[in-house]
Amino acid sequence: MANRKYIVGNWKMNGLQSELSDIADIAAIASSHPTVDAAICPPVTLIAAASSQNAAFAIGAQDCHFSENGAHTGCISAAMIKEAGAGFSILGHSERRADQHETDADVKAKAEAVHAAGLGAIICVGETEEERDAGQAIEIVCGQLAGSFPSGADAGWLTIAYEPVWAIGTGRVPEVSDVAEMHAAIRSKLAELMNGGSEQVRILYGGSMNGGNASELLAVPNVDGGLVGGASLSAEKFGPIIEAAAAA
Ligand code: 13P
Image (tube, rainbow, N blue to C red):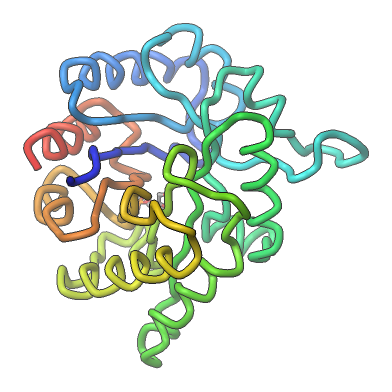
């Protein structure tokens, strides 16, 4: 049976209190499409307000530390994002892998930490343009997946997001055949890494998804949803993606 579609907005470093009304507008659209799981990951400063103002709508974090607590100035723990109202966290986004030098081992430890706190995880993987041009995309992505894969993972709390680095924020989207090939490769790798249940793990596509291309991308086999950056910042842009998922 096909997985329920999962559409997640990653607001990255965007959003002040004045943008909380956009989350309310998005939550209202999501509530009229109950066959789709939708969520927004605002900056950490908005998690508490967004979750208390939209009790029925899923709010996630964009990162958290792998330690329970301690001397890590500026970092946030899984228990902290949970207490603020997050139900899950994005982990290992390529911007964090590049800017904060996060390794696969860090991402695995973070995923295990969020699970221990009772939260879900979306682990991001994706190749650079140079790696794709060199014909290494599948090898790189499956390597990241294996290295970042938390022990004891199951579909109840783990989601994977395939985000080709060169498609993020660029308006460029891979060929549908390349998305299909990569998602099938990730599905096979999950089967290797798990003791059953790999078919139920949702694999999201991310990278310049918008209201114009969502239907085509969400129709690709093994694409169980989307991780959306720029087009998640307003209900006007994100609503059509949720609607496309409802129709998929
Ligand atoms: P864009 O949708 O802006 O390309 O961002 C994708 C992304 O990085 C989501 O995590």
